Length: 134
Image (cartoon, rainbow, N blue to C red):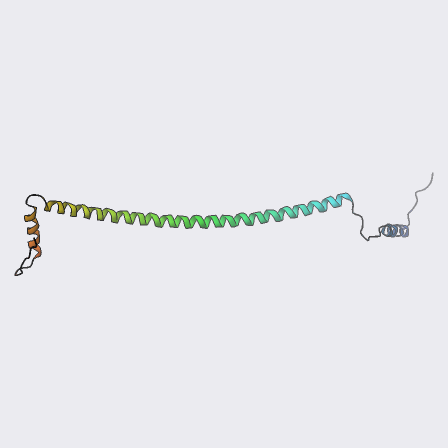
């Protein structure tokens, strides 16, 4: 049986130089596991970038929707307040119109003219001449 052979350091260096000389393009060979690992790293970076981009877009849309909702709420509040104010004024003017219609109708009943003149007497100052147009 033979003894184990010892490989010389210079032989290893010469051998590595031969491998480099065989690859004329200057690119070192990369094994399949390294290529897969690099591809997975690129894929993770790409997915992270796309997820950040999607997060930015979603947050932008959320801001736009929230501001639109706030503006819509403010406009709705203003419209409700205006509607309340207008309904109050309409009710007030309706009561006034009803009162004036009743007063007008009272003028054309029997004795309405006398009551109208009695009301007019209160408006005329003393020592003045009242003119009634017929």
